[in-house]
Length: 130
Image (cartoon, rainbow, N blue to C red; front, side, top):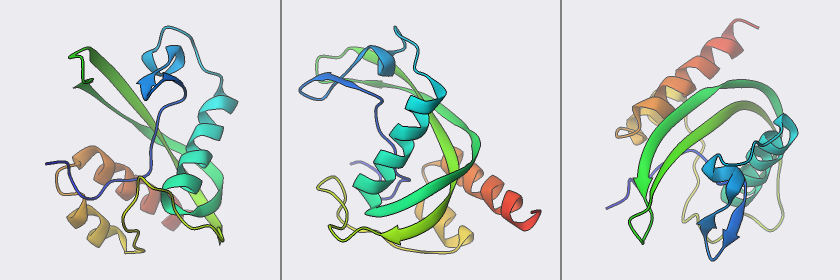
């Protein structure tokens, strides 16, 4: 069973039918602007929120297998973002529920995603020290 909670994230590009494209697979390099636009797009799609990037926080890396057992080494780059507004259309089909919670509750919900919890703690530290 997949973990029920995670932060918004996604692929830079799809080749077709949900298969990662060359930028996602790392065979073609993505620009900083493409990475940032992907992050903003995923927050729009998965959280139904328009935001602006404040700063890059860091990344999480892991390996997973596609349906054909092809191994994919995935790097997810996370950004601290400022909430601007809810989108009238809401969140997309990949999401069943969104919640606004404090950092400690977010880490509790992300219990099997230590890397994401560490990034939430880093974001909180950035906010507190501004």
